Length: 397
Ligand SMILES: Cc1ncc(COP(=O)(O)O)c(C=O)c1O
Image 1: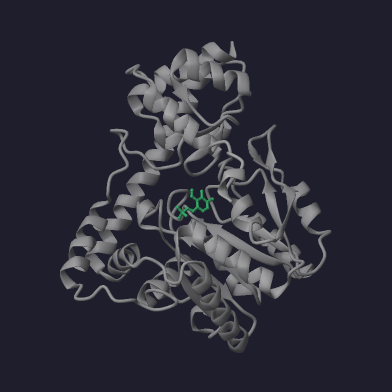
Image 2: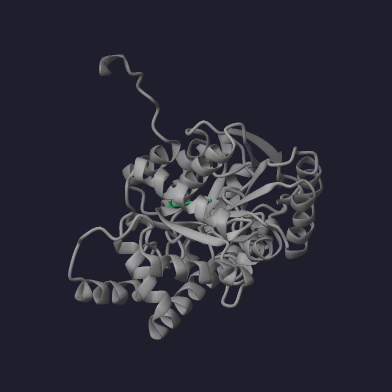
């Protein structure tokens, strides 16, 4: 049977990673893969994670199954992290969570739930959106449609065009939104824009599906959750896919959750029962290790403080790199405006260069980025920003 299968091309990011690894030039710069890097170019285990991990292993007396929804303490702590202590939804009886294998697992669970609620539902995604949103949401049979989002002229959000499109959608359309640190553009909605968007979502009876994978890496933990907090305070139904990969550095532990706000407690019970059934048929139960670590961090006073200050340092490092890159590029490419680098948030930006320039940067200057010009700002280091800016200047001359 299997001999008739077509061979598929590898994921583009794997090609960039392999080419970078094979490059022996000591000046090489990796701005491809979307993981946080420190000043030494490493993606270290956070100190709070190391400590929590020791505690978890010391206390663990069994490896038996946890529960269909995963670690209940983790689910509750994540609800508080995303929505903030004292949020009305927490005590409403309308919020339910299921632990998921990473943000990807949460996105897929959400897609399957939407499909069961309405097999004809269409999910509207930003142009552009994170490439993996497409298979995660459509492989179960949901249809996807794009809405305008990124304004290439300003490096910001084409908000009028976005709102105009969403304001024409039929009721029960699903809108996928990035809470903060938009991947791949770095262009985020301002708070006032979230409020305007809320008006449209409410008027058109749309279902917001919010992906929050970078909480704390844009403006701050509370600020990066402005959208989900507002929507869960004001709307009857919201889906939120949460990832702990970046802000806890737990990538390979596959730690995340799907949070579902339903119109009534009865509807919330139905939704979580459906989600448990869906998860059972996909992977049965989520892995516990990352969730146990995250739970220990969020509920331990000292660990939480240590995690929060480490996360602050990561965010500030990204902001410093953005400022320094802008400063150097202004000198090496005086004819191009890179001001967007400082206005955008999180790890990603489009450098605004074409495929030929991306190739030249890779082949002539050992600077690796995605084919569409997406760069991971955290892949820069203070000592190679000058080299990077000069390479870009040469290519864009
Ligand atoms: C926009 C976005 N959503 C979700 C995720 C989920 O990642 P994970 O499944 O590793 O938690 C990522 C990771 O890169 C992402 O960029």
